[in-house]
Length: 259
Image (cartoon, rainbow, N blue to C red; front, side):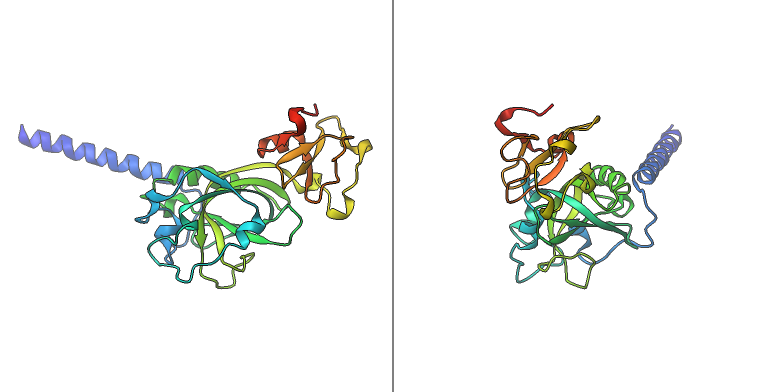
């Protein structure tokens, strides 16, 4: 009887191991040559401070994050307070992407408010994040970011992180990144927006057969309809479709939608 029980237990453990391996295979999307080393537990939120990270998001622009004060000491195994204990949400344009040897997707984010600031956002391959409580968040974000193209407008949630400066493509002067990314959405394309020099009302182009193009005041978070007083005239802003603006969390002026 004891021998039979031991056999059953061994079979159960074997099945559990297979399930674990299958789950890891499903989660791992890339083909990392080797997982990272430098501050890796912090990068995949499996460090001792990971449970202290505030999961409520703080909205910020790329330019604001690129100018946060860099800590004097960046610890190898722990987090630098307060920014590495915060989750930030940005609406940004995709300047480019790089696939890293460690399986990370390295996304260069551009500011949509008129500055030339860029920051890096990275999401790890789940195969290199086993043991992290955010592994399913990484898997979802990874799938989204494999499809982004230059010029896409994205909404990203990521945990604050100060990387060591070693000439990364698109890195901010302070080394600040969103790393890891825990949520990602594509809400539009910069091709539907206009540069600063073109910020004039364009009623003839504002309404198409598919969507209304609104003007988002990125300072106030309010968008304006074609023909209204502030359409295309605020100091900071960007054109996008109304559906994209709503998806990014912007609200209509005077609570009146355009369509």
